[in-house]
Length: 116
Length: 114
Image (cartoon, rainbow over all chains, first blue to last red; front, side):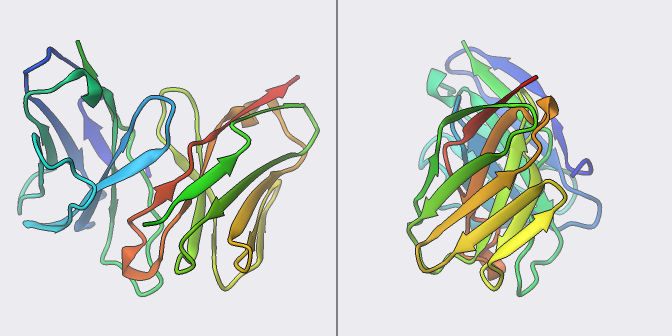
């Protein structure tokens, strides 16, 4: 879905620095999902947020990772004290209010994080 | 939790041939099965999906079949073209309000040789 905007597209951080990845959902969508793709692997679910609420963070690492979706502005995925293993592509998706039959997930263009 | 296995990991075909990618899943509660195509450095793009009340779905050269009893589903691409070359991912979720929580296979690198 071309409407999901992510930035930066590419980010290089040194070990120990912080990485902030931003996701602007499709206009009118109030649900945001973050996935991570390690090199040569499939995507793995991280977190599901609605405006000002974390609904499901079962895929988030327990430490250093946090996510928010404020009332105004984009959703932000924050990684503190990055390590080389955090190098991955981070994809965001959005949807309107989920229907009983579920929503099709369309991903944004992704943010590629490289930790050196 | 759900576990999705995908085979083969690489597939090479001649232009015009058919390609088949197979996936199995473990959670019998899963009822939503999308397929994504990802080109190098790009986002995964949804190409087709199927829900558990349907056994087969077709969209031009692409078809997906689902066998809920055996817990497997397959992607079929006919008359392959070089632009079909990409990594293909299958995924599964329990659907409904939890459709967002997709479990992905590890991907199949499809190469279509001209």
